[in-house]
Figure: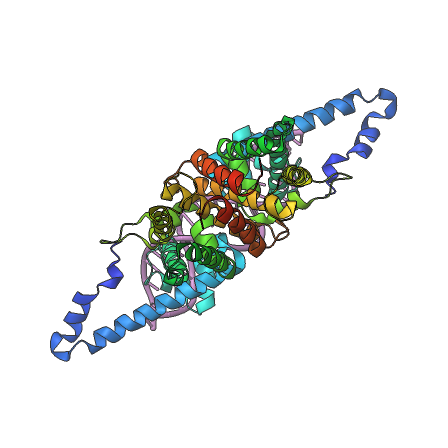
Length: 227
Length: 227
DNA sequence: GTCTATAAATCGATAGAC
DNA sequence: GTCTATCGATTTATAGAC
């Protein structure tokens, strides 16, 4: 993603010269970032209230009280905005899970990861929809993107689960013989199922997400983990 | 849903009179049903190949080689077509699960239900997306609709799972103390998670749906069901 | 009953005035 | 840097000829 809008160096150097210092350049960059953030915040609000398909440049422009064309000076296209939303979405998803890693005991950590996963999904339905349920076009790109050295936030989040099961297996506490990756992805699937069903149907499942998680963890502790 | 197109009685009685018998009326009705089915088949194909958002009256008209306006003589709107697709989708979903009920043993029946659920989702991705993953607008309506006396096909499908767990509990074969409904909906969530993740991300989860199901059933048999 | 033609709305994106 | 104005494409749905 080479967004030319992020490197206006030539223009500013020509106009102000470097003898003037970089303060004005920095101010411009800051204002630019602020405008972009304003656009993204409005976009998130629209997706939350009206769904992803309702995310149009005109609606964003109305929300931030600018003309539609102005947004194109800060974002290449509507797709670029959607991609940025997904990117930020995976990052806040990872941030929501991370505190669970402070639990030293892998079983307690696992339960906390599940609780945090579900809470994130229910409290941020617009973000959850965007990264896990909508048109995979943008989300898949953001999930699979290879950052410079590290994995994408989405992959890192999954890695939290995998490492927890690897640890349980190392300690000989797994009751069945299965790959940590397979177990982790099965858990992921269940968490995703609980959240996405709740977000799609308001009245079904009749059981609350918390109770569904409790039944699942009861089964999990009995059937997968040795004490 | 009072679709005036379904009750053209007055028109036909005026035109043909009842002395002429009902054969022509029946032929008209049959042709009408055939046209509607042709529209729905084309709509299914479009949803399969290009996604639900690409379902437009023009595309349907092109596919069946009629003018766009003609479709409005048979369907009230695009929404009515989407609703009909969901309705038929729930019915074929139920039909795909039903054969599992021939297993007398509830545990074997449960495993077969899981296999059939996942197979249906993977083999009918367009229908699955439509009834369980897309805009809940039409699906929710079709799921919650109260047919004359019986439940909707969607509710009936869920009832297959619930009754299986009720049977297991009656026989004293449940290892944990939980409502059959809660257990059934937890299983539903997991099945839905496995299928929908696979349909949304092509490369993640890395574990195949079959292997995910196997891990899950291993945990389930160990942690939930007494032998 | 089907067609052509089109209305009315809305979309993404761009051009040019200021 | 922001605006107005608009292009060109797309949509649902309708009107009227045949």
